[in-house]
Image 1 (cartoon, helix red, strand yellow):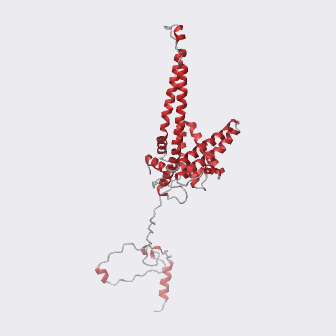
Image 2: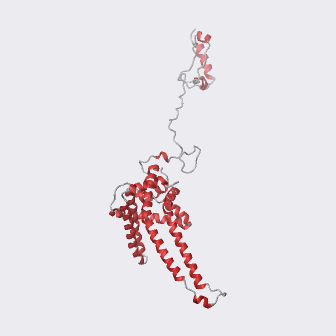
Image 3: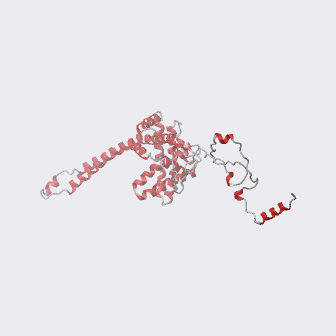
Length: 350
């Protein structure tokens, strides 16, 4: 994953030979938005109409600078590419605005953090035409997990120069206000009225200096914006490509090895999925039987008994066993059967 300095170097390489296209596209985009914003004077309907246009249009501007980053040489008309899938892009812009606004209601900082979480949504919509707006927001949020501070540092590395003219304008405003108060309301009882009446009023001079300095700082900030803002947009596109190469996508063809998490075997929480053991379980050994009888003595222990040499030499005496059932489970016969057997033996001829 590239560092901030490496992303800045890649941004300069992407803009080499494309400065005119980037500056022209940015200026034209904001001129169009400024012209369309005039309909905001129409109560309610004008505001709705502006956001219906601005949402897909800003997505097209994002795609325009992403194409410049990838050296695709887009034309100016590509700024309006967001209107090709108007419904999907409008829904994505509305959802991003609503989610960011709701988080901003807590405090300003959560809204800023969530704006960085949703920053990759519009570029994901370009690379995956089949993804839904809500899934694109979810994927952006997952991709930016742990990278929001890096994107904030990247943007801050460009826009910090705007603080210099802004601070100068604040100092000029303070000086103008202070000098005006001194010359208009600085009457002291130690001086006579004739002294103040004869002194030169310098407040118009300081006011003129303030106005000139103010417009000078505005011109400097406008020049910085033309030079810096295209770099910010292109660097965000470079950041997106670098983030895509590092984290991949959550579609079906994604290598999910980077996102698998190990869950303890004893985790019984709701939704926990136990890890799958790739080795098949060993099958239990089937029991062995010495013969087909069902007696208790018919089961053979797994370990074969050790026989002595004397027992091997002696022939094994046959034992009388019932073929169907053993003595252990044979039912007891009645006593009358013994008497009938003895009578049969006496009646037999000798």
